[in-house]
Image 1 (tube, rainbow, N blue to C red):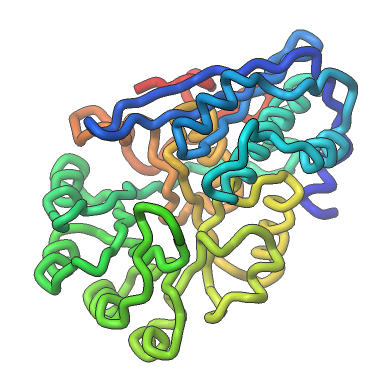
Image 2 (image 1 turned 30 degrees about the vertical axis):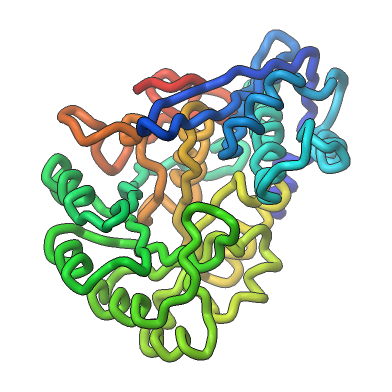
Length: 356
């Protein structure tokens, strides 16, 4: 039985749909905004989180209101209906946002269906939750400052790091990180276009990173004739994230990966996510979880999935408290298993709102 077959025919009754806004000031010039999707039915509430990055698009969605989904569904029939809907009042600036919003509804529907059935996700999947290893994911700013990472390693000795590399890195920057931090993943961000994190393809950067971090995964290089030479000998450490939207994309990668970064919101659907997990298992690939700066229930849900499918990996699923600067008392890695009694939620209070 496929993973999706375990949930596709679960019934879900929806009587009302609500949206809730979450905000977190991150910097003077940036406030993170997400939207909690609340599906209510039969005395229960299912929650998901839309992680669309453009604040104006989140505001427009909240002002326009959700679609009318009242009725009796299966998870699969609801997914088919969502796939046929345009969930954006105006077209998004970035096409992957469509998957982010659809995932908010599908994850909320899964939570609601499980609660109405009186079951937790782990039991339906027939998989025991395990402690979740996580890393801290960060960039160094411009100009690059290794102190951003080293402050975390001083506050949380031994914590794993996922770091975004940029063409402005120098050998001194890379060496400082290699000597002072346990860097497990270096994100080269070679597959973004039209965003503030575009990094292009830089053979010199790739060669330096591969040399300075000989044990780290090298995520999302842009592969051409020059960068393929720069990555020679490190091909077995290449992983994929941004180009991966479903299992079929694994066949189109220019370098066959031994591990991939799984972001449920990028995939956008339960069928696509569980199909990818099936393919990962069939191909014997490693996997680690990816975050999208979730502020509420979405963060716990990616921790939940990591606990089932890749607990002992450099999961970019640190608790919401890590969105703030280093300070004493933060939860340490690994996170103890914390599934809700029923549904698809994770955390001490199994809440859908920020806790830090």
